[in-house]
Image 1 (spheres, rainbow, N blue to C red):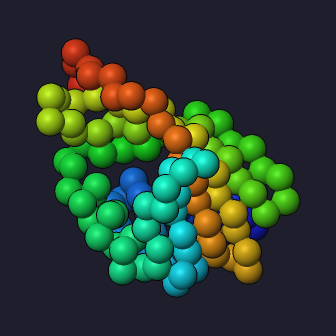
Image 2: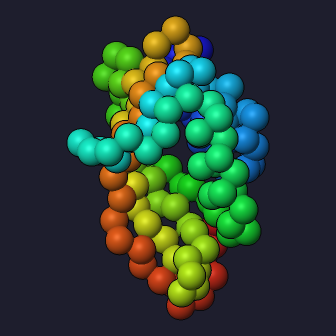
Image 3: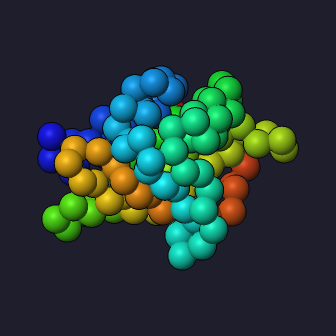
Length: 123
């Protein structure tokens, strides 16, 4: 699979809330970071915990706004619908993935502050 196809498979698994399928797109020792910042998770077990917590949100859905590919790097701009303590809302995310040998080895994320929705979005 190309790096773009791997990242698309990851996004599809995210939207299905399929932890096992999403982990299949990541290397066993993959790392997730805040963009230019702290380590969020390293390895499948830590990532499984993070994804399982996020996938418990009933309205979770990621919509791809744009994708750029440069060799093994894939940069997605996404809008994510989430269930926040104050209600349903969205965040925009910049997701930078490094893909090697058909697996994501490193991912870095930046997001906007949550924006609460006044009505249910069309997904």
